[in-house]
Each structure stands twice: as structure tokens, then as C-alpha cells.
Length: 132
Image (cartoon, rainbow, N blue to C red; front, side):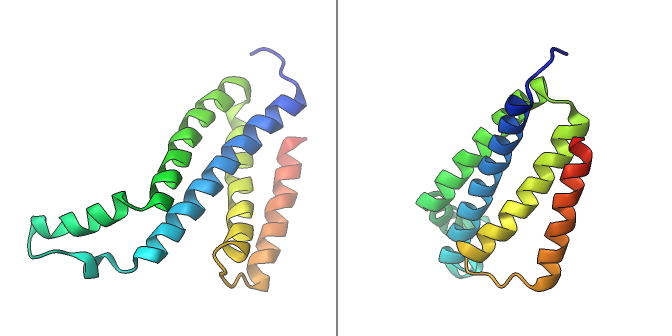
């Protein structure tokens, strides 16, 4: 593998994590807006699922979130072409975990308790340790 600059490596990792966070938060917001999908069923049997499917696929938040997740997949492929898997996978997963907790608190208004913030601190320490 070619030598890749530290800036390029961490830009790739951060980009993948950012797309994952955006996609997950947008999809969560869409599903909260839609509520319980069972209430959207249009009737019994398999045809009854057309209502929930239609509702999900007509949600702008869901569609943008799904697009972010698709871009995330291709960004991950690019990142793995320049970053070792042993660094990329844990770093992306960790940054996604941290970003999701922060976004859940700030964007979705979730209650993120002290125990979760402590866990996030340990995840940050882990990311620093694997990057050395």
C-alpha cells in the first residue's frame, strides 16, 4: 500500500463517519415522525404493508438519510483503499458511536445519561490508542 498522509487518512475516516451519522439521524427522525408503522397499515395481509412502505418512501428525511447511507458505503470503499482495515474499522465505528450520541442529544433531543458520556470518553481514548 502507498504511503498516505495522516490528514488524508483521518479525512477519509471522518467523512465515512459523518455520512453514517447523518444517515442514521435522518432515518431516526423520519421514523419518529411517522410513528408506529402498524398504524399505517392499509389492510390485512401483504397488501396492508403498502401504506407503511409508501409513507416511508415519501418521507424526505428518510430519502436523504438513505442517500447518506449509500454514499457512506462508497466512501467506506474509498477509505479502505487508502487506510488499513485495522485502523479504519475501529476508528469509523468509534467516531460513528460518538457522533450518534452527540447528535441524539442535540438533534433528536434524547436523554444521554452520564454513563453513556463516560463510555464515549473511553471510546475516544481507544481511538487515540489505536491511531498510534
